[in-house]
Length: 207
Image (cartoon, rainbow, N blue to C red):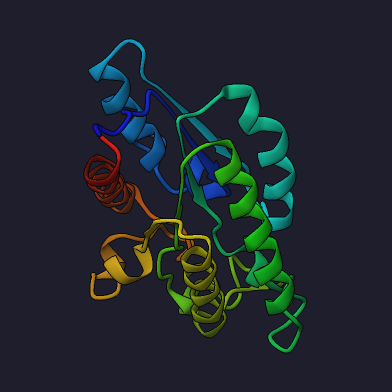
């Protein structure tokens, strides 16, 4: 049986979804939208990115915002806001690992009830520039990112949800060429790569 081609695609997540770090074309989702919508006047791409969004907040937004748009496909980029340590290097992560696991499980279950869903892991970041982040009292550590990214993989496997694993795809890339000044988000070249990898993944699995 031929698979149904998605005409309405939603990307939901935090600042990387709305294009943080890309001063040229507004991020990888915007780059995806420009190409996808040009293929057919019925095609639509929604970019639902909110700066600083944690997974618990994504659950709320997914429940309210996704059904209204009646998507055929949903891509989720959880990001790393849940691993942020505010106040110092010895502080706890914003969300405990077990709580994050439960939240990710609920988010994926909520999303896949609305439309076919895939999830994306966060890109590797430059810890030298995220400890602290932007001269603030917020700290992002690669060791935390590794643990929480593995949770995303495990929960996706449990729910049988495809995963676009940017963490693995970027692992051997020269990050100094792909990250913005803040060391956490992609720069225009990085967003171009994210777009290309997302396009290839969606075409292979859904188009």
